[in-house]
Image 1 (tube, rainbow, N blue to C red):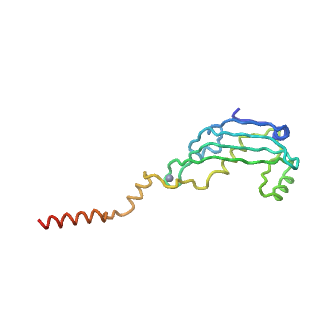
Image 2 (cartoon, rainbow, N blue to C red):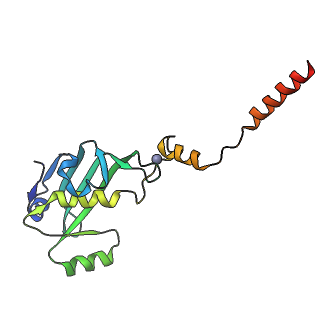
Length: 171
Ligand SMILES: [Zn+2]
């Protein structure tokens, strides 16, 4: 089941669970940001919180390849998301609850809730703003830098050359 659609209120109240794996092709909205990915594991668990509100716990994990903003080569990103969503009947109640508790993530009840859309949102929110290697490998980017920088003679090479000349002068 690569595109699950279900009643999210019924799912939560019956404490249902669902898990599986998604390929990048199943997640069209993240395709522009992500070059490649291992299958992305997802797990969804319904529940009821201490205020008797239905909840959905979503966990995602996988390894994504993003484009490094410095050298434009792939850089690995570990996707590790765990978010609890609390379900509400209308936006007014959801907004009030979110105003009371800044950690609360609200969702509206939907009879035909598309899990893929929520998973795409969570992945997009978790991506770094400007992905980059800690230290880019020498490659096309580094070569371009080297061309732009005027070549200075290596001081040790200069010294060795000088020593050679002095030696030749002694003979
Ligand atoms: Zn890089």
